Length: 140
Ligand code: CMP
Image (cartoon, rainbow, N blue to C red; front, side, top):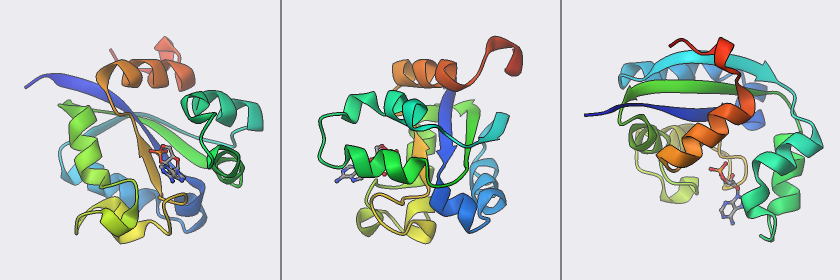
């Protein structure tokens, strides 16, 4: 199995409810290592840029508003097949469809306030990690 890195965001609904530690425990229990992490208040421009791929979607403005409604924790997770492993740990985007024991099933409030984001491919993971972290912030 290949050791990979993926970008994770603990979203404002989860930081508001003080769930950062509980969510991080899920990653560590499943063998992912948190190799970089910081708490940020995203600006509107930063949220728009990060989610630019969704710009034409009907939910874009609400998504940007939500992602700027409180602090987020951005983090890099490392481990075997980290992109896919994290998507399994998170569960489906819509918590109504998420499997039991996943973060979104247990913590998400709605499809928008769904507690966590995770990269959906290795290529996007590289781009998303570079969006938030400089080389000096990442362990080699
Ligand atoms: P995320 O994995 O961060 O990627 C885009 C986000 O848009 C998604 O999680 C959801 O939180 C949010 N979103 C809001 N409404 C929808 C929707 N109808 N379909 C998909 N994503 C949505």
